Amino acid sequence: MRLDDFDPNAVDVEDQRGSGGGRFPMPMGGAGGKIGCGTIVTALIAYFVFGVDPGQMIGGLQQVQTEQPGQLPGEPAQAGANAPESCTANALSRETCNALSSLNKTWQPIFAASQIKFTPPKLVFYSQAGQSGCGAAQSAMGPFYCPSDSGIYIDTDFYTEMEQRMGAGGDFARAYVMAHEYGHHIQTLTGLSEQIRSAQQQNPRSAKQLQVRMELQADCYAGVWAAKNRDRIERGDMEEGLNAAHQIGDDTLMKAAGRRPVEEAFTHGSSAQRMEWLRKGLETGDEDACDTFTDMRR
Image (tube, rainbow, N blue to C red):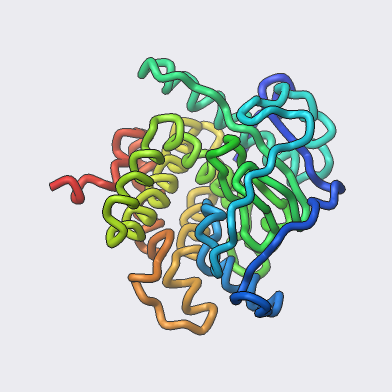
């Protein structure tokens, strides 16, 4: 996908790489229990890749509210302050910043037309471990969005993991990662995320189904972004995106982990569902077509 180079004054970027990430409690497997690193990586990638809520991690990893030093809660970092060096650290960083810039330019006028206040998210690079407004960040979690600080957290090593272990390579597949996480930011800005959390609390039995539909809507929003930038799409891009959607479907990941797919355990949707909603966004280019909750309202 041919994206313009990012405008350092139009993207909000924070870089935690090289900071060590700090130490944090990780109560995996109960008090005093231990789970091997391989088990953690397989489990987290299998269930929480693309848009994990850190509070839903295996073993109940507690959300530790932490703020970056020198930054007040909810206060955005100065746009572009760290962008040049952070975004040019390597090719994948630049590619990610280019995607962020394109996403900002695409969604801002959509919100303006709807007279809804738009605030772009910040992009946070980290390596292995870091800290977010939702608690600890670690590379095994995959990319995720934190609504507490409007941050999209990415360890770019995950892109290599996608290609080598999941068979989901390509620049458009990587852009899909960013666009999906950005979709969760859209849900936060429109108030949908808060409504869904409230509904989950009121009806816990529907909590997992609501979560899946949130993820599928984020997939659709990713497709809408791509459709609105159709002139930048190159041959093979759509196939890369749809392949990535298939490879990170819950049923496919469960099979890869040697588990029998169980729909009740899905957190992001099946491969068929994820491909369906990404394709819907790609084909319609209409954010209003991304209502994954329609049949639940009947």
